[in-house]
Image (cartoon, rainbow over the protein chains, first blue to last red):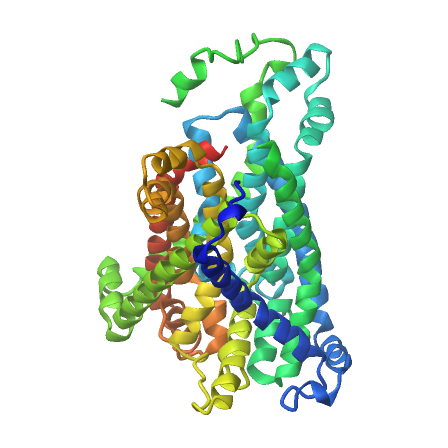
Amino acid sequence: MRDLSHRRGWGFWLQLGFTLLVCALLTVPMAMSMLAGLTANYFVGLKSGLTLHWVEEVWRVYSGTILLSLQIAVACLASTLLLGVPAAYALARRPGRVARLVEELLMMPVAIPGLATALALIVTYGGVGDLRSSWLFILIGHVLFTLPFMVRAVLAVMGAIDLTTLEEGAASLGAGFLRRFATVVLPNCRSGILAGSLMVLTLSVGEFNLTWLLHTPLTKTLPVGLADSYASLRIEIGSAYTLVFFLMIVPSLILMQGLAKRGRPSV
Amino acid sequence: MSACVQDAPLPHRPAARPPAGGGWTGEPLRLAALLAPAAAVFAAFFLLPLVRLIVIGAGGAEGWSAYLTTLAAPGHLDSLISTLALSAGVTAVTLAVSTVAGLFLVRNQFPGHALLVALLTFPLAFPGVVIGFMVIMLAGRQGLIGTVTQALGAGKLVFAYSMAGLFLGYVYFSIPRVILTVMAAAEKLDPRLEEAARSLGASSWRVVADVILPALKPALISAGALCFATSMGAFGTAFTLATRINVLPMTIYTEFTLQANIAAAAALSVLLGLITWAALAVARSVAGTSVAAAG
């Protein structure tokens, strides 16, 4: 990055103006919706006063969806950790054509629209026992969709460190596989596991494409409730609900940005 | 090919593989066992259902030609064409906007720079439904744009609940991701190339057109393909804005839930999946070099 401040011409100001305009396009509606969720009457405007009434109303009507979303996100994280970290290790230790193929296959649920994946799940497992009406049905969809992100994040870190040499060192000191995995491999992949976990949580809490078809009236998640409220309730409730959603994902978004920034200079 | 890469002794990393023995026996078996749970879940809940979906798409009396018949049905073909056009338009606009903003942010430092980058990449993980609501905030019945145009005496401009609103939503959704890709690629450009071009008397525009854009091409193609694929397959934004917007995911949803025409919904989903998967395969093959360089 170079500092060209000594010759900032009209080009600089024009581009700055353009970039600020793009930024406004992205952030103004966010700010408007947050404010609308706290305004007593949006149609009248801010002079109607600020209130937490709508947020309370959202909690009264939709707390079930918020809790279910958290439950699914945590279960999804546990599943992707258990499935994804060992898989990433196996792929990292044996790079080659087969590993590439497996990786490509695992990425498919991201490449194919969630709508198609959800339809496929319904036509195959919709009639199996009580699965269709269970929250586990949604969990399956979320695990399929988020697993690639966990595998990718862990694989990226495993590819950057010299896993073979680290493990050889531990093995030469007599450490068995489980010990090497727990005390050498996992600690060295911390940053990848953390980045993957944040991504999995954020994506699971916000997932809609799959969830809309997989959900039932008794298994509504937060985004399903959001779609519901946008369609049928007054704008203040939709806004307050969106505000609750922002509050849930903002911490992980900020952590992710921090991780990305910390990772950049070392690359 | 991969085998020779593995077996050839790398100059900077001698003898990567230890002799067999000790803790290393049975390693392939162990690796297979570690991969097995993920592979089993994936096969049972993704590959098998996908095969079933493909078979159901051809389930009618016509067999596999049902795919062509389904596609040729007037409503379906229109829907496919308008979705393709929408996605292509969104991709072009997003690439143009994000390249200008991304290049500017990489090539200039100023107070507030970090905050601007953080704000621009913030909506990265918003789901489609929330994006739809953001569009309603901007261009809906009580939206900002309508209020401003009304105040200017030009009448209330409301376009959220149409293809134009969907277009705005997908651009909104794609900008953060593409800006990040452009910035990552631009940061890795060799500044000496630009300096060389400048020292030979090239103007700023020539430097951008002849040096920077060609160097960013792989990143732009890959980001563009991703943008195209998400615009083709996204569902939440269209669902929030209006169920009558004629895009393929909405058509599939209507066929499935309202018409209960599962064969047509399956056939169209398979077709849609093929399109998005192909777009992303192109992205990966083109980005191969740039990803390697970024590694």
